[in-house]
Length: 151
Ligand SMILES: CC(C)(COP(=O)(O)OP(=O)(O)OC[C@H]1O[C@@H](n2cnc3c(N)ncnc32)[C@H](O)[C@@H]1OP(=O)(O)O)[C@@H](O)C(=O)NCCC(=O)NCCS
Picture (cartoon, rainbow, N blue to C red):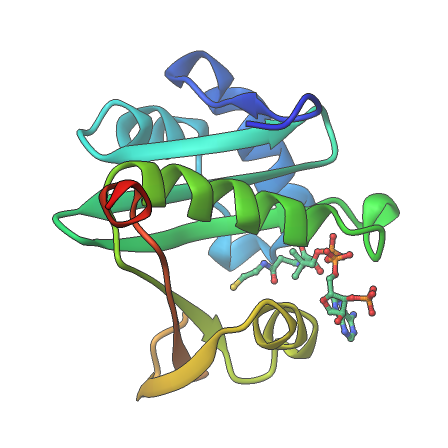
């Protein structure tokens, strides 16, 4: 993990919830208890960049998923979202994941642009996935797991 990113633990749950609340509308916010519960589960991991951004992800077998990603408005367009995404990918690769998946709202043009710039391609759509009734687009990117790098 890079010098500026800290690995998330359940002790970071309040800080992660505060970061999430700064980036998502009220109906989509996650409580601190949700972060604490997630981070205690096997395969779940995350990273924080001080009070500026965070990512939470999960690995299962050879697939991984971004659960949430947020950068506070004042810190956006400085490469932090991309850095958090790469950190989650690196961690997933180290655990043997071969693919990363994520969902993004159709209207979330900033996040869609971030994922497309990071090499993700669209592979599906989940109708009315979000609380506001909007659809989710499913994106994926191939990873190179640690075992394959060592081969
Ligand atoms: C999506 C989000 C995490 C991006 O974070 P960020 O730190 O601003 O992203 P970065 O600075 O790393 O952007 C990397 C690239 O993504 C694209 N991008 C990011 N924000 C963009 C925007 N508002 N408009 C167009 N392209 C954008 C650009 O290609 C950008 O590269 P560039 O700045 O050199 O042009 C941030 O906007 C956010 O927290 N949004 C609210 C929460 C959210 O939507 N989370 C994702 C849910 S799926």
